[in-house]
Each structure stands twice: as structure tokens, then as C-alpha cells.
Image (cartoon, rainbow, N blue to C red; front, side, top):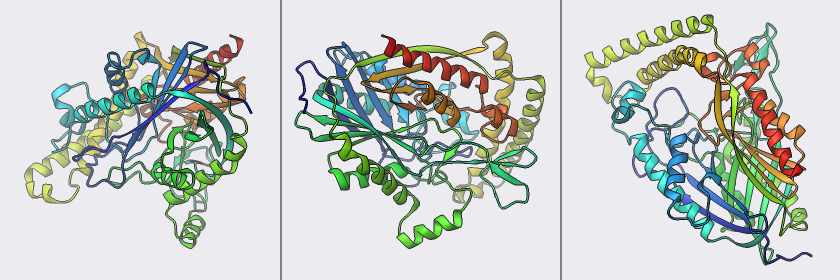
Length: 488
């Protein structure tokens, strides 16, 4: 068996608690949700990788958040500049697991009006800008700890399978698609797109061949509990628990969501059969997912322990890629503004009712309806702003990271990237195994052409600043950048 060389890979791990200490806005729905309790901790996990031989490095950070805002990313990097010698902050990237029960970290540009400007009403809740500062400090400290604790180690990688994600869009015979909804309909034709049940696994080992951590990458956001008014890491909490029960309490687990903009853990066909099996097993859906992922990991782990690379080829490139915005038409704007006006009128009516009946504010979750209408009005109204922007800025610059680690690779994007684009990258990558990592930024949906044709949430103009053309451009440019690591 090979042993760690002196100038081989150096690895460091760290985890930090991001759980807020007081009520926060919970991200992931149109209506506001103020957290009413903490169901389980939310965390950030950092993995530092350095190759002295290649004189290159990377730090991967996974956060139990719906997304990573540019402001959070930049705040973390700024804090790292004076406190992590030898670390290039630009080579640190954060990904969100897309839990719909994590604190909001997307801050408004209106400064002091951050909460009221976002929701259309005042709420007694932590300002997202304040939580962002708290999270940025915790994450930066964790990255620093991972960086300073790096020590000789090795990596191995492999592929397992677990049924976790499902395409959440179905198409009727008339070609119209629906997200979720009732598939027990005479017009039901088919599920719109592909599903990827791959579990991509990167293992890290110390110099004594002890397992230290896992990067677990799969195509499903963590949103089983997506409508809850709680703080929670969703199914990754149960997954970490199950993996640590089997492999050791000190195990680090870094989750990544692959391209999965049209996926979710919810069943839209066969739900009754699935629910029956959960009842027979005595498990929640989140527990079942944790077991499935842990089964996939432990099934291949003995084989991966035989193939540890101590000095793998290593390269990390960061590029700014310009991709085409979704070009909107005047008809798109007209339709969106009509919807915006409808929701604005509903918001104003709800606001007037709250003013005339102040006792309504004593009702639990009284703010849900009024905030939903306000945010939908702004969402549709933004289509007109994007229509004007495309005249002078038809391209959108996005940050992309590509990493080669032996015969495997990572490739990031900041979007809720529909699964087809991830498969385009995997199909054309020269790596033996490619981990696509979405939501390394604050971008929203990038739909396929068939999704745009079917319409529905996630594919209509209001949902998608980037369209199918930009999605293909990003996939093609990512493949070029990945394959260049092998050419070099």
C-alpha cells in the first residue's frame, strides 16, 4: 500500500454552528416565516485541501442555508484576508444545501429598511443583515480552523446510488407543465425530466488511514420540511446522525447539492405507497433519506479504502464566465406587470384590513397572506426591470470554480441549475467522476427549453433571469474549464 509522501496532499476539516439565537426570517417561500423554534442545528462544514507539489489549494464550505448570497460570500472572504496566511480567499467557495428552513442571508439594497422593504410590513425579527454578519464571522473562523489544522492525508472517491430526489414537474397532454399538484388527472402525460440518483462520495483519510470526513454530493435540495416555521438543516441532519452512528461521532460530513433546479425530495406519484412504507418502517421521510444515503456510502466505503491517493494531481481554477440573460419580450413584461398589479392590489387590501383591525396582529402567523402578496408583486414587477437591463447588459457574469483532484473533479455554479445541464457537464467531462455543485451563489432557476415550453413556476420569466441558452453556455464553458485541467 502507498504511504503519504512528505510533499503530498494536506487536509483540514472544521464545523461550526450557525443556529441563530433569536427569531429570524426563514428563507424559501414567498410568504414570510418567522422561526418559532429550532428543530435541529444548522451548521457550516469546511474542508481545506492543499497540494504543496502543485502549489495550489481550495477550501470547500457547505452551509445549511437556502443559498449563498454574494454579500455572505464576500463578507467571509474579507474576514479571511488578515487571519489565514497563505490562503487565497478567492479560492474559498460556499454552497448552500437549499434547506427551506435556514435563516435568510439575502440582504436588501435598501439598507435600514431591510425587513420592511423585503416584506411590506414591520416584523419583530432579526434583520437578515445582522444574521449575515453573525454567520460570516462563524464561517470565516471555521475556514481558518480548517486551514490551520491541515495535515498530511489522502483522498479516495466513488459512486453509489440512493433514491432521494425526484423531478417535481409533470406535463399534461396539452404540453403544459405543473410543479407538484395533483397527478391524478385525466390530462396527466408524463414527468417532465430526468432524475439522477447518483451519490458522489469523496473520502478523506489521515496518515494512519483513518477516515476523517466525507463529501456527499447528490441531486436533491434539502427541503422535506420546506414549509415549516422552524430552523432546521432538513434531511442532512438525519443523514449526519446516521453516518456518524455507523462511522464515528467525530466524522465530518460536507453535503453538496448537484444540479437539481427541477428536483425535490417530494413524491408526486406513488405518495400513498411511499407513506405506507414509512409507517411500516417507523421512520419519517427525513430519517428514511438519511438511511438511504448512509446505505449508499457504507456499501462502497470498503472498496474506496483500498484506493487512497496521497499525492493526486491537483488544480483549482476560478473563472468569471459571462452567460446570456433570458431575453424578455414586451409581451413577457405586459403579462408580468398585470400579475404584479393584481398582487399589489391584494397586498394593499390586506394592509388596509390590518390597519382597520389591529386585533388581527394577535392571530398566529397573521403576516403570511400580506407578505405573500407583497413579495409576489415585487417578483413579477422585477421582470420589467430586467427587460430594461438586458438592453445594456445582455450578459451576466458568474463565478465558476473547477477543481481537479486526481481523476475526479468539482465544478460549481451559483444557480438552481436544472438537472439536464448537470448531466451535460458530467457527460462531457474528462474526469472519471464529476461532482457538480450548485448554489455556490445566489442565483435562481436556470430552466431547460422543454421546461420553458411547459411554463409553470421555475420556468416562467419571473423565475428565470437566465434561460436555456445561458444554461447551455454555462455548461459548455464549464466543460472547457474542466478539461483544460487535464490538458495542463
